[in-house]
Length: 80
Image 1: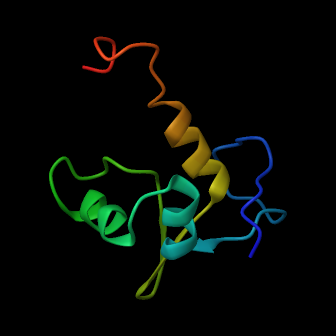
Image 2: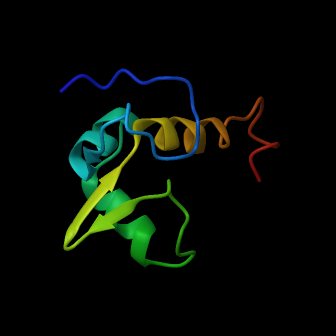
């Protein structure tokens, strides 16, 4: 699956497919377990917004990109 994304929109769109948590983790260069932990451990909701369809968890790459952009810093002191 290609992980290229359209500009961040922040809303679900018929033009953007949902991706699995494995694909979202690959896009963010983190482990699937980290994404799972961010959904369940304090602070709950610390990761990108996700969608749940039954027992399946899905993401939009544009939401992952927006979330990652919100965590961009210019220096380590700014990241606190």
